[in-house]
Image (cartoon, rainbow, N blue to C red; front, side, top):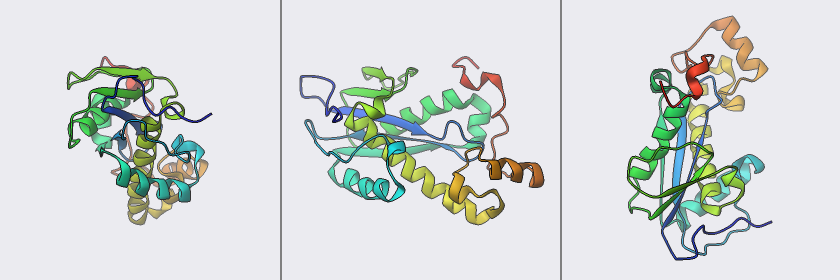
Length: 200
């Protein structure tokens, strides 16, 4: 089933927002905000997790070319430790929205938790990256941006295999932490229960 191009029947500047990296042991959380033209179509755009790396990279270039506006933001592992991963994800999406070159009329947020700091109407959509084109586009930009970043960090700490696991808890990554300890890019708080609370 093709993804929906817009939420409202009235032409609005709808901005899709998604984040990537919440479940990682290392590296920042990244979020993208993307405004696509109303009634935009692209049959190839889908949830970034359903696409190959080569396809994501090609779509990244297409999205950046076609978008009315887009922005990718990141929140560091140190800030994640300070405010927790859920708050960091919400902050990151807000940062991306706030840096857009145009102000959207409506935010479409992937997931079920969000707090808006720009006084823009929003809707949370569970599995939004498999429902709306703008959210799927945001998932692709956030994913490709963060993957590129983790590959650069891999050159600094190759033992942790970030080039392949992108900071997620793969067996090799976990074993490297046991063997070599934590790097400055590791989150010290990934094991804490309050990481999924908006009250910190």
